[in-house]
Image 1 (spheres, helix red, strand yellow):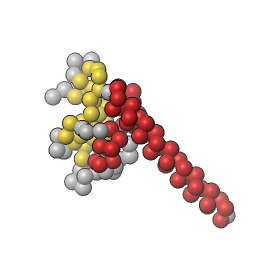
Image 2 (cartoon, rainbow, N blue to C red):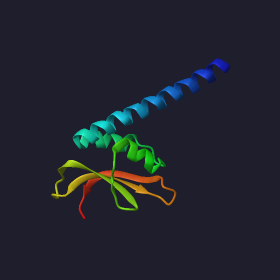
Image 3 (tube, rainbow, N blue to C red):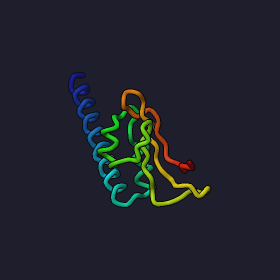
Image 4 (cartoon, rainbow, N blue to C red):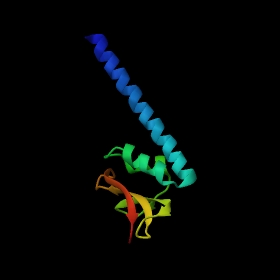
Length: 105
């Protein structure tokens, strides 16, 4: 039973490291290419309750609206609006909502 518990903890630690490495890789790709595909994957993998400094570390400097961070891609949507990811920031400086879609404002 003890070996099983140790193995489970070790597997959990390894998988969390892979996710962080994947996030870093996708974030780097987004910073270099401003592409929809890598930004979508970052939005999907980024955990809610992530600190805003972590988001900036992965994706670079955002468009800082004060209450959310925005990252744009190199294309527009059906309505002619820019496509981007929005990370809403709660009062504790953590991400409490995230999405990627057209930003028509």
